[in-house]
Image (cartoon, rainbow, N blue to C red):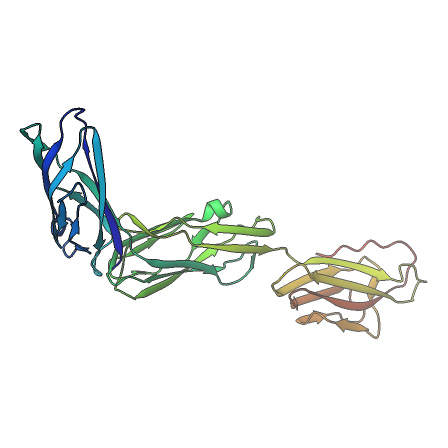
Length: 348
């Protein structure tokens, strides 16, 4: 549906003789059905009396060139709205004319018209993730052209984004039109996509973040989106953010007590560095020999889930706990020892 400028140049390399009665034809319809010239005829384009005319078949007549001279002229072409993206070869007819009283013919001139389709191509992760997580990566393609787009293709190297990242789970069938297919692994590849004018497709893959992935931001850049081997949209880009795991600590307060006097054992789950809520948290704390949960039990659970701290027991457990994104939570349990000594407490 756009326009393009087609430029011609004629040159006379003879240093003494003029070239006259120069003429050639150029069949635009043979290049691309519906390709038309606009704004013709043009007069005196290459010497006095020369005329360039035509709509689907260009014709130059009456051109002339002085010795060792050249001329350049151009015409605007209207590309048909339904033209498919691709490469279109244009070859003129032979150039004929007179040079010093002798009829001469010159080989056709050729050039290639590149028609690009117009598409929107984007992708996005469904949010931040964590080491061992499975974020969803969604690709979206829209055909902005008045013509269909076929043989749509792109590749997206997940391993280049984050070493060890791969797709996981089943991949969508015919993700972008009948006959299209999607392959996965460390590289996501679409082939054979088709879209009618104004149509869109969207499809998703699950990405497995390696368990050993370091926290940070990982830009993910695909290749170009192409149709029939011609790029129709630039690479799509989004950034995957891998959050750090929660930090876990505990302490006694006070740290020194008399035998038979309680001390508060405090557990802190610190999730302040993450944009994701932490859930399904659990731990088991086997208290040192001689130390038990105080009677009566004094328990504060700010981490949710199920906390078990039975008076007289030597074990404290949490299951199903959680901490909000960007926050920390605290659990406190009073413990007591009837014996004297230093107690080292390590949680599982």
